[in-house]
Picture 1 (tube, rainbow, N blue to C red):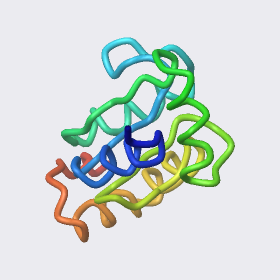
Picture 2 (cartoon, rainbow, N blue to C red):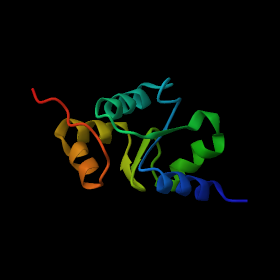
Picture 3 (cartoon, rainbow, N blue to C red):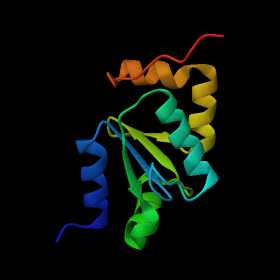
Length: 113
């Protein structure tokens, strides 16, 4: 039987972009998760959402895995990027688009205005 840490590691390494969140991408169950979903959807990123509310073991395990106390948590190419505030700041500064490009993750550039 694989440990929850092994299961989480498998998720983040077998998917280019993974969002551990409350709810699903189609129905986020908290404002912070919703904000990250909106950013990823706006950028046209293909990602996997993992609903931590559906599994208490994952909910606790992801916090231990990343050593980060809050959810949502975004992973790109197996690397922890951050939670809602960090993702929002990276998006606003353009750093998130740059990071996605550097990692070879397909996305759309935001409209310039």
